[in-house]
Length: 228
Picture 1 (cartoon, rainbow, N blue to C red):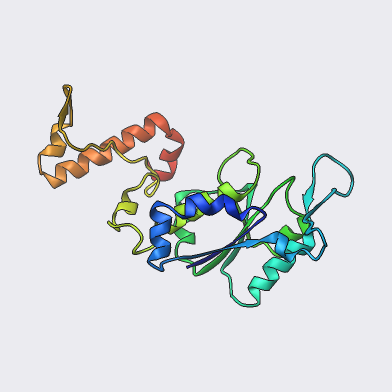
Picture 2 (spheres, rainbow, N blue to C red; picture 1 turned 120 degrees about the vertical axis):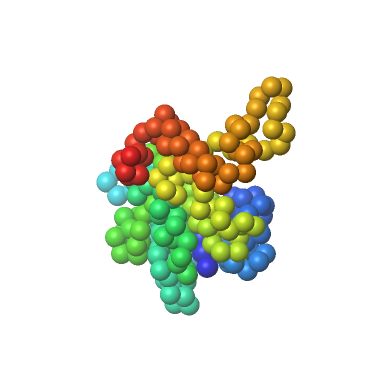
């Protein structure tokens, strides 16, 4: 997969993309992540990328020309499955959305800033808008990093145990069950006996029951989707 990220602040990605699973995915060649500074596509002497909004109002708006020029320049070289704008009013990022995106070949992620981007970009060049939650960030960079991590970790060859992602929370519309590791007895706090039994059938049953129970307690809104 190739992920092209359009941003005013490419340095914000240095930490998330140089560590852990994302670094491993890049090193293995499973994913190529390219950062594009939108300022490089401004023809102005001062590389201006924002201007006052028509009709007045507080804040600045990302200008249409450098953003359009950046997107169109990339599209001349690559066919993209999606051109995604990270927006607080987009569809909510869920595990199902991440699953669907993980099988695509090429995507663009556009990071907004200030009061957002010129609406004409959204109308004519964006194919999808995604939000990571009902709140506002200073820009779309952190949201793009979250989306990238959620998608890339699902790709074959990224996780050491490829079945691990299949048991993550939300894969089956349930929260994951509790997990434990050694020692089995710490200060009298003991691991449930069933997990030490070696009985795979009973362990699977216990895990499912705990998932349903935990979801009912913490995220009852998910149970309708799961059919419980």
